[in-house]
Image (tube, rainbow, N blue to C red; front, side):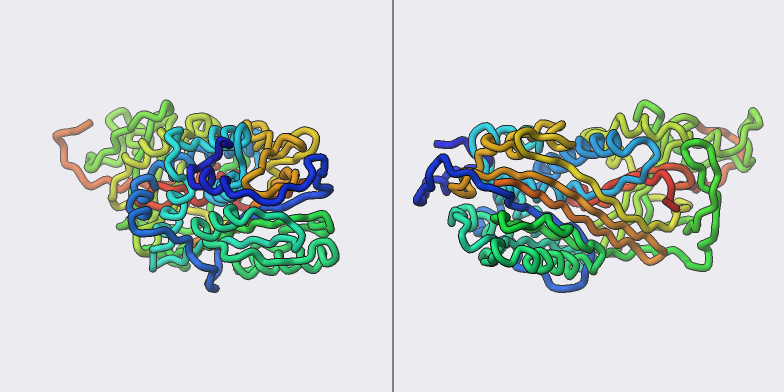
Amino acid sequence: MHRQLSEVVARSHRWQSTERPATRLLIGFSLLLAVVAATTEAFSARPTCDPDEVRTAERTQVRMSQASNQFGLDLYQQIISKEGPNQNVFFSPYSVSTALMMAASGAVDETADEMRRVMRLPNDHFDVNAAMAALSNNLMSTRECDLNIANAIWADTSFDIRPPFAAILNRHFGTGGPFSVDFRHQSESVRQEINSWVEDRTNRRIRDLLSKGSVSPATRMVLVNAIYFRGDWSVQFDRSLTKPRPFLLADGTKIDVPTMSIRSHGEARYAAFHSDGSFFETPRMIPMSRRSPNGEPEEVQFYPADGFSMAELPYEGNTLSMVLIAPSQIDSLNRIESMLTEENLTSWVSRLVKRPTNIDLPKLKLETGYTLAQGGLSASGMLPSMGIKRVFTAGQSQLDAMTSEEIHFDTVVHKAFLEVDEKGTEAAAATAFVGVGPTSVQSKRPFTPTFKADRPFLMIIRDRKSGCVLFMGRIQNPMQ
């Protein structure tokens, strides 16, 4: 019996189909597409599982979120290494993880083990697909924000897709039945159809995800995951207070950027940390004097001189939030990035406390795109550098639970969109897998800390219940 990513898939693989000759290799590619976006339109059916399975799977949601988060942070390190120190970065760990989960449901043996290891999945073989379904349903249960997740399959009429694989994607990812299409004779029209599907489900934020020629007569299958997010702040910024304010770039250059502002944000959570990530005790009360006993300005006394500050701004409903991380020194963002692990992030977030906080945050609108992997006779790119190689390598992919054909994934492309304004946040992304085949006795006053994103900073959009990171990135230049 093949060793597979989940026990459900392992059981499913007992089904046998008529095998094609082993010497026949797929010429061309299959494709897996994952999309993350914002839209108000209806999505396809939610993943389903029976009540007992739901109760069991819900207990694993935090573990699934932790795995997805750590994988996303690992991928973040790859992206910033590739992009260099001065580029904005934005992507969806959840999107890439979901896409990989769908693909991995068809992997067996060494390929399944390799993907499980890199994706940081637990080794006790709990049903990861059911857990992902429960997590997705939980994420979509929020009513105050628009957060929807959908999946679909396009398969060539001649593609030998194993029914149990299609059934797993339908049950746990809500794909419904595969769309039967003719890639061999109508590849361009199918490409346009898929792009239209992506545009519709990303509020037209992700366009032309699949470039001309990316879908060919040799394409065998396309798997699509879409996630939509649009959230309004629980406390919105006053547009009349938005004005150009200085932003310090990493090289010390000062530019003016449109910056939103809230004084004494009543729903924000705040914390500060030393340079090593240890907690910095921010006072609740401070001396009436605005200067410390040695004459230093207030901010030097009550903020970590060489550390960083965090602020969390909830969206309506308080289920989802944006977490912002800004260094005290403009040249120390990379030090924070080097400490980014799921364990550290969870620890830092646990230190956030609700208190009135002044918030200065640039308005943002950016688009990003990354090639995460390229396959063929050998694999290259970010995902292979992380250890996922076999699924991108011809003759080694071991996708036997997906099909009897010899296929491998050839290209992974991820695109993302972000817009942050006074009302809220809109975010979109798409991932395409293309494969071949102290105190004082003097009088005091309350201290209201100020969080200023006026230098390169990090941002994370997360689910507060499970801790799942939906989007993350860094802003080096809001005007870039």
